[in-house]
Amino acid sequence: MYDLIIKNGRIVDGTGNSAFDGDIAIKDGLVASLGSVSQPAKKTIDAEGHLVAPGWVDTHSHMDGQATWDPFCSPANHHGITTLVMGNCGIGFAPCERTDKAHQDLIEVVEDVEDIPGTALAEGIKWNWESFPEYLDALDEMPRAINVAAQVPHCAIRTYVMGDRGVNNERATPEDVERMAELVAEGIEAGGVGFTTSRTELHKTRNGLSMPGTYSEEDELFGIGKKMGEIGKGFYGMVSDFEDDAWLEEMEWVKRLSIENNCRFNFVLFYQTNEQWERVQKQLAFVRQANEDGAQLVAHVGARPVNVLMSYHGTVNPFFMHQNFGPLTALSPEERIEKLKDPAVRAAILAEPTPAMGIEAADRMATDFHLMFELGEEPDYEQSPDQSIAAKAERAGVTPQEYAYDALLKRDGEAMIYFPFMGYDQGNLDRQFEMLKDENTVISLADTGAHCGVLSDASMPTFLLSHYARDRSRGKLTIEEAVKMHTQETARAVKLEDRGTLEVGMRADINIIDFDNLRVLAPQVIYDLPAGGKRVFQKAIGYKYTIVGGEVIMQDGVETDARPGALVRGAQPAPSSIVAA
Image (cartoon, rainbow, N blue to C red; front, side, top):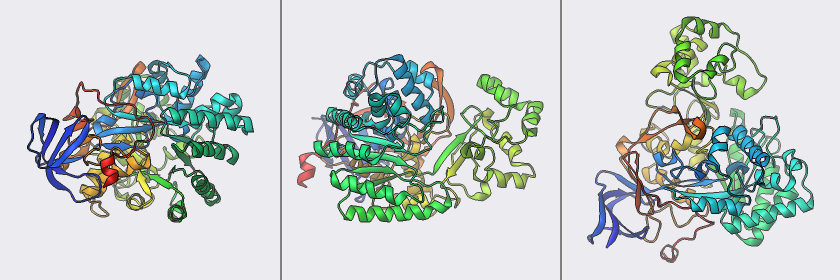
């Protein structure tokens, strides 16, 4: 007898092959049969009229803290994510000395770089570990609904080995490099799926310092890579600015590290300005040639540009630097909105000259109204320039500041403004589409669990399927392409070959989807993190069931009591039936 049979579904199996109608039988957490299944089962789900697809694999999350207290890693569970990978951008919580100072130092880095409330991390994390293997054990002990995998983070490794020298980005000695490489190998041998580092100056701490590891020299990066090559496990991950005058040099050493150590190298690829698009195209061409030469380079790209969500309750809005707005941040949400509705308060804020901090990103959040859009109750992430705040204000005969102020008061002050401040110069997602379609890229960069006050891109898989495969008027994906992108391709990029497709012997991580009605809902600010920490939270409708290891963890957007998820330790090979085929 089977444990579960899903009957009459439209199966999109994740391989890219054409969808077909049929049944799926599940036994012991694995797909046991596909096609027409007549044998009995303990439970049956009728999926008639719905898509049946593999669970989404999220390669770029920052759930390193939240995964220690939240079995669902929400909002991942609301968007069909059944496996997520943590430890990206070189950031994580192990290894870490068992001292209050060491704990606080890592919390502050994560709070500053990833905008996760430090008070929530301080209350939620129990710190029942020091080493990375002990951190994995702590994750393993906790019952959970979805699967998680962790990468060894350079920031924590460097800080643990070098102390203040590492924090201050001093050059590592040969002894430092040897010790770091040993700890990385120890972490991967214990079940870490890879190692990540950050080389972007966007990642700054409250002291204005770039996070540890940003300026690591080649001997340090290759020392770690060599050790990974020696043990023959794990993959390398990196985020970098890829400066226009130095990107080629950086890609050359990335290629060399990959080839010399037979190591997959995942790297984040995005662009900040229109002028950098040519660099992105050249970089993708470089990757194609490098892989023909024997490298294993994978560019991780987003389905949406780098963006922030602005609101009166989040971290930023066009007035967050105004003196007359500052005191309102100490009020409750209800009190804040009542004050903002006061004509005198409105007049005082709008009368202020736009402040300038001298920090480009912050200053743009108060001035770039031509790239700001009302998100609305049915979020639209691909609006044309004539729908910008600047354009609407001009048509209404008011200033952009006046229009934005009032727009944020809609829906009782819960309205948000979408600001795609990097990579939306053309006023559409054509370039994101082009990057997604490249054979050497995977969809990524959801930052699930991070940037709590300005972002909720855990909705990325929902958006990919509903927008690119259904709603978009041009440059569309087929349903089969979209599903494959967020299942088989993402799983293979992080060496999890036991999931991502619906084939006999594969893990039974499955979404049953009402495709016609699938959509993301309007994001809102909620206060459910430990210590009452706030975050931007976005749900979806259209997921009828999300199944992990053959057990239903979500039904019609509601969590069940099932806890079939687990820590994924290391690379997972494909079942023998798949390899033989």
